[in-house]
Image (cartoon, rainbow, N blue to C red; front, side, top):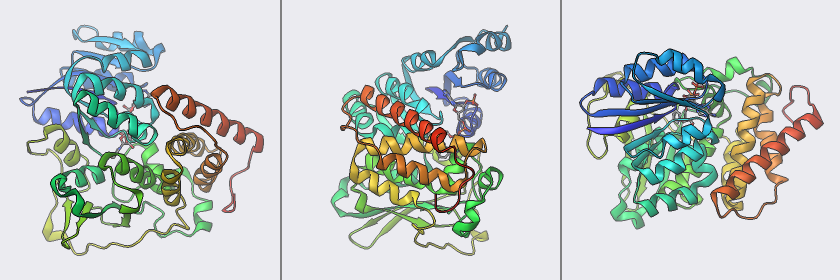
Length: 392
Ligand SMILES: NC(=O)c1ccc[n+]([C@@H]2O[C@H](COP(=O)([O-])OP(=O)(O)OC[C@H]3O[C@@H](n4cnc5c(N)ncnc54)[C@H](OP(=O)(O)O)[C@@H]3O)[C@@H](O)[C@H]2O)c1
């Protein structure tokens, strides 16, 4: 029986994790569950999972949560600090499934107090990868990647033969605009961008998939998780989303992990590691497979990919700017305040206009993140741009 905290239980990853816990009540004992604003879903998950503690990040929702949990015996709290505080309760494993940089402080706390952290929330790794990896090493905490590509690579990466690894390959579905021209993308609506062809996910990562910024963040994530230089990390577009990641070795072997496009496989693989237990999710039916195709991504139509390599070459401050700029621009796009191509376009400009010293501490990371957000919001107000053209 493993004790488990689920940060972000109301989200797409959190709900898949809940499915897994419900399918294996003898394996996992949930201590804490958290959410941002979705009180009713949080209370329902807490009761279903028999959690001991529920935390809502929005301070103002404490009374609502308390009322929703009344009579259940489940303790509760509210506020961002309470979410982080919850990560200080010892556990066998913490699943980090908050979206965005909001997950950084809880991750930081969990790295000290949990035996293992299963990380779906890639943004903190992008913004603070070196610090996160160092902290895991300091406390002997296992980092278990949940992102399907990184989980795949984790499964097939031969740590005993690292010198024989020639490259790691992250596969990408290509998103809903894989075959769209730049002109078409210039007019893309949030509804179109949210319609992912193969995965069902939260809004932010769905938009990131449409811009391929998700793959950009994953390149940086892979760099830190597997300690590989950017030149040895490649992306291949694989529209079927069945091969999730590959490692190529010097002897010509390609080791890959395959599975249905169902996040319950990487989540259960991380939560049950080093064992393997039955997924309640979908499985791959080999007989229905007709084709597995791989093609190089188009860096012209998806400039976010180039940004990842540029930022890794520039250093950590640029990676923080990439992540923060993108988070702000995704919000802007979803609210209808900017065009689709603005997301990478304006993020790129904010990175170019940044000149920060290399961050050394978590506080440095947070300071740069905040500054970039303020600057990009300021730039948006100043230009007050109408919906964007492809040249923006
Ligand atoms: N979905 C996938 O298939 C997938 C695959 C690979 C990696 N990931 C990564 O996993 C993370 C979660 O993705 P998702 O798709 O599950 O997102 P999601 O469906 O939007 O869920 C996000 C979760 O985070 C909570 N949250 C949002 N803002 C918060 C804040 N400021 N403070 C505390 N909690 C907050 C949400 O609570 P409320 O519900 O109350 O808003 C919700 O529980 C992302 O980093 C994503 O890139 C996701």
